[in-house]
Amino acid sequence: MSFALAVASTDGSAAERLVRAQWAAELDPEAVAAAECAVDLDAAEASCPACGAVFATSAPLCPGCGLRFG
Image 1 (cartoon, rainbow, N blue to C red):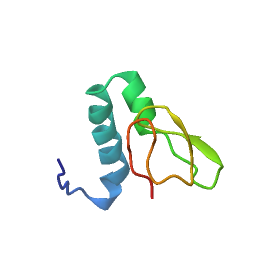
Image 2 (spheres, rainbow, N blue to C red; image 1 turned 90 degrees about the vertical axis):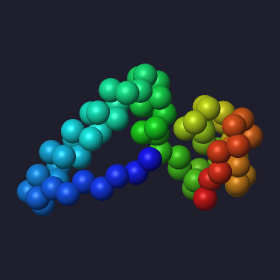
Image 3 (tube, rainbow, N blue to C red; image 1 turned 45 degrees about the horizontal axis):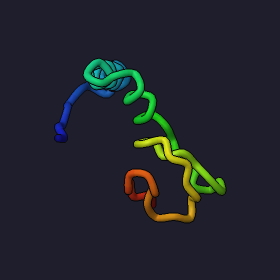
Image 4 (cartoon, rainbow, N blue to C red; image 1 turned 30 degrees about the vertical axis):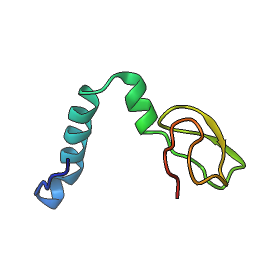
């Protein structure tokens, strides 16, 4: 689902905080932490933000869950 939200430029940061707070309130803490996880594709290995599996960053898909990288 996507949506558009129009706010004054001076209210952008506050609007972003409110949207993030609402999004986080609908998820369990582990899901929020996983969603906010960044993957360093320049490293030799990384952990999948979706399932936590360790994978070689040269792989196009996570071997644990199939999440596509790149």
